[in-house]
Length: 116
Image (cartoon, rainbow, N blue to C red; front, side, top):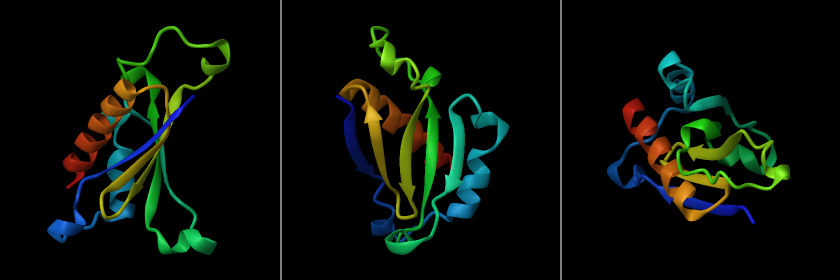
C-alpha cells in the first residue's frame, strides 16, 4: 500500500515563510527539470483558501531508491505528489516505502532550502 507522510522544515519557528508565487517560479527553472515534473499553486477555494500551498510533482526517475519490482498497475506512476506549505510543512501522498519517502523528503527539502 502507498505510504503517506509529512515533514516540517520548522520555518515558522524561525519567523520565515516561503512566498509561494516566488517558490513556484524558482522550481520551474531549468536546473530543476530533472526532479520537478510540475509545480502549481493549489486552488484557493472553500476550506483550501486558509492554506497557502503548492502542488509539487517530483519525477520518479530522480528517486534512486524506487523499487524495481513493482506491480504492472504501479508502472504508470511516473511522479510523486507532494504538498508544500508556506511555513515549510510538506506532505507526500504515495511513496511506495520508507526508503523512497526519506529520499523524496531529502530531495524536496534541498530544493526548498535552495529557494530560501
